[in-house]
Length: 271
Ligand SMILES: Nc1ncnc2c1ncn2[C@@H]1O[C@H](COP(=O)(O)OP(=O)(O)OP(=O)(O)O)[C@@H](O)[C@H]1O
Ligand SMILES: CC(C)(CO)[C@@H](O)C(=O)[O-]
Ligand code: BAL
Image (cartoon, rainbow, N blue to C red; front, side, top):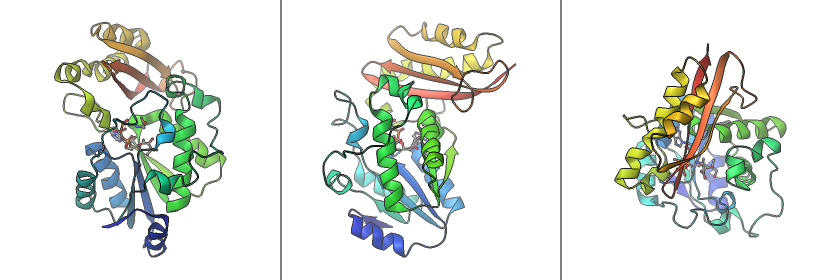
């Protein structure tokens, strides 16, 4: 595995990369969800390029940028074991040599909803860094997790609207055996919070199985964990548009478990 920190070394590695090139973008603190993205990429592409960068631009003031887990040595071990060919691990100065960029990707009105409503500037920051990483890595295909379902949709929209010659592939959410969606932020949870956090996946499953009113069913499940503060629990169509009356749809939720904000979502078939 070639670990590169600078643009020059990335460009040199990219120039000799073989065949179909896949990129998996992460903020590090790798877990089995990330490994699943890498495994899928490994099975479908000739060269797998991993990026690890905790992007300051997508954190609002007061969010967890400073305390976000940074586990680079372990990340590189996992990456090596997953068959990554190139790991790009830029510093902040390498990504943003001019400081915070003056020009940013505008996610449009959809980027102000759900995650964008609770995390001001989040999708401006995500799409700006994803766009930059697309330019720097020039992948044929990029893998993102369905755990961050709205993010996946916003990235698909950017690729479509900016005519980027990149295939975007979504990978189903990897869960703990008890249902909790894997997330780097799960590391913040104390044991009692870890138990309480199960309410997200439990509420989504209960809502998905409800005969009527899935949203009310999900919200009622949250009431069983009063120490978990619900941010949103919504039903949309699979593209995050208005909820349909019948057929395929998506349930999405976000909640605060103590000081940790978690998200999850599930596919649902409305009767
Ligand atoms: N449980 C999971 N299953 C599948 N993909 C995942 C999972 N968790 C994260 N990913 C994907 O991995 C990529 C990198 O995500 P990121 O580094 O932000 O990890 P994260 O666990 O989502 O972190 P955080 O806890 O900060 O939200 C994204 O495409 C994300 O959707
Ligand atoms: C896509 C991403 C790597 C951009 O920083 C981040 O939002 C993430 O890890 O999901
Ligand atoms: N997991 C998406 C990136 C973030 O929450 O900041």
